[in-house]
Every structure is written in structure tokens, then in C-alpha cells.
Image 1 (tube, helix red, strand yellow):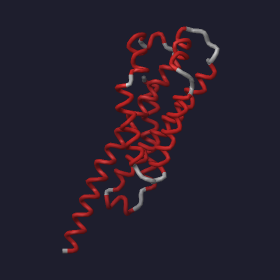
Image 2 (cartoon, helix red, strand yellow):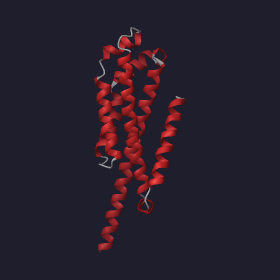
Image 3 (spheres, helix red, strand yellow):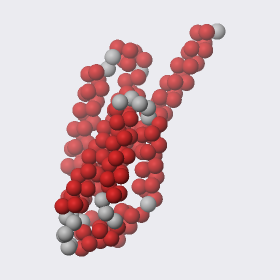
Image 4 (cartoon, helix red, strand yellow):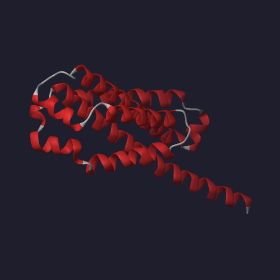
Length: 180
């Protein structure tokens, strides 16, 4: 837990420093710095989630012949297709946010992950039945990292949408008032 908290602090601090260092004067005066920071945090969280899923895939492949109880049960759930697919989708959502292509796909994907991750019992059932004590420490770390990245991505993309839609509404109201 503390390792995940330390990594999250380092990531948040670095992205916030980058955002404030590259903020233009227009961003600072228009208030766009907040939405830009949320967009960047969401994007980096999705890329981080993608990276962790790639590491999980490598770890799963490295333990393909491991006959411990954990890995036997893990192989019953399926192969590496799931983590590879999740890595790809998170990569696309992250790049969409970071490159400024739009936040609709990241928002939709991150919201889906938050809902599906909560209600799809594949991981949760093993967690509730076995607990973390029987899991390899590396998997526990990966699980916490994935949870951290997913939570960061969804909260930042939802907050971005809420602030951005409000800023857009205020901007359109100001434009109307000027034209009248």
C-alpha cells in the first residue's frame, strides 16, 4: 500500500509540475489550467494502467509453468488476452487525453471500467474467497497499482467533464451577452 501511495505521489507531483511549467498565459487567465491538469492526469493514469497490464502479462507468461495453487487457479480464468486487451484500450484512452484528441473516449472507457470493475466478480470473487494472503506479493502490488490508476483515471476524467462543460457553458453565455 505504501509503495503504491509513494508512486502515486511521485506521478501526481510530476504531472502537476509539468502542467504548471508548460502553462501558457492564456491558460492561466482563462482557468484552463485546471481542466488541462485533469486531462493530463487522466491520460497518464490510463498510460500507467496500460503499462501495469503489460507488466502483468509478462509476469503471467513468466509463470506459465508455475504449479502453485494461485497460478493453477489463475490459468482457469483464462490466458493473457484480457490483460493485453485492457493494456491496448487504456493506451488508446491515455493517448487520446494526452494528445488532446478529446476526452469523450477516455471518459466513456474510464466510466465503463469503474462500473464493470466494481460489478464484474472475476477478480473480486477470488479476493473475497481467498484474500490477499494467498496471493504472490507481486500480484498484490499489481492489483493495487491497477486500482490506483483506474480510480485516478475515472475521477480525473469525470472532474474534467464537469469543469469543462461548465466552462463551455460560461463561455457561450459570455459570448451571447457580448453580442446583445
